Image 1 (tube, rainbow, N blue to C red):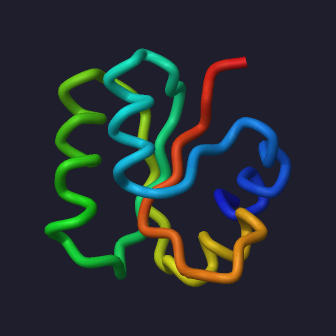
Image 2 (cartoon, rainbow, N blue to C red):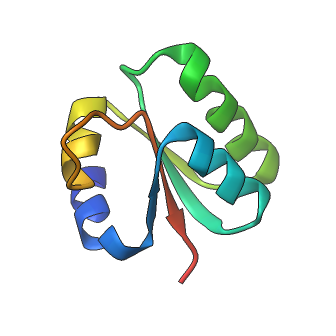
Amino acid sequence: MSYEKMTQLQSRIIIGTKQTLKAMHNGEVCEVFIAEDADQHITEKVLNEAKRLQIPYTLVDSKKKLGKACKIDVDASTVAVKHE
């Protein structure tokens, strides 16, 4: 499951839309996670960039669970995983 993967990759994650987009443009990202219950105007840019740059992405059902998997106390709309 995607949430478990976030916990395992803790040292390689980038949390937040702005930071995710920046890392994607810099070629630092190997995968993106996007919460389906987040505001579409927030996640749409990340989704479109992932498609354009051919970065694998996974849609998860809950921004609350995604934030928890990242070990933060707030919701996370988007999370990126950096290359090893």
